[in-house]
Length: 198
Image 1 (cartoon, helix red, strand yellow):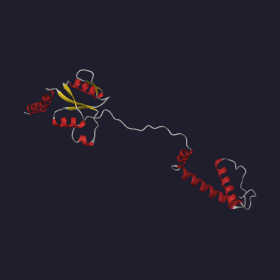
Image 2 (cartoon, rainbow, N blue to C red):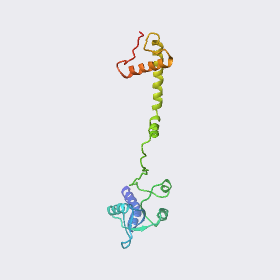
Image 3 (cartoon, rainbow, N blue to C red):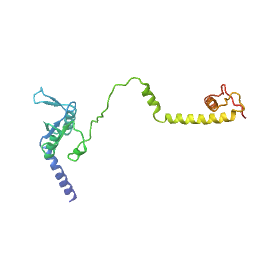
Image 4 (cartoon, helix red, strand yellow):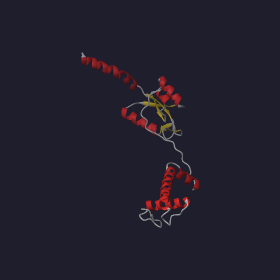
């Protein structure tokens, strides 16, 4: 009983497919080069292109018989597909959310991305300054200058009374202290300014 049921189930499942393959498949064609190319000079407007060749290879492998039917627009082809006048729609069809609710699509075999190509602008000091002043560079430079100022002020405060090379005024003294801090930070030696305090 189980074997007979399985055999009956196989016959019922394959019956719609065998009816479909007993006739030529009606293939709607829409698109533009390189996907669909119509050779208007040839008799019967011979079709070729990437999508056409892909369909022909599928049909050859699956042994499908088919007839091409050019359609004027994607909506017209989709409507004929839904009405059963076409079995397949071939061409440069984009997959959209709205279209996927109406018909089934195969996996896309071509993806395109759009970009803009423009002429490179010439050299500009303003553009160069914007590049350097954007992001974290101004903040880092500001923190570095603040630290140099604080260290320079501390050095001036400690050295002003005992070091004859340290200017007595605040502005010049802090500047000399900043110079001392910077030279100490970036080199091994102290250069022309050395501390006198213990």
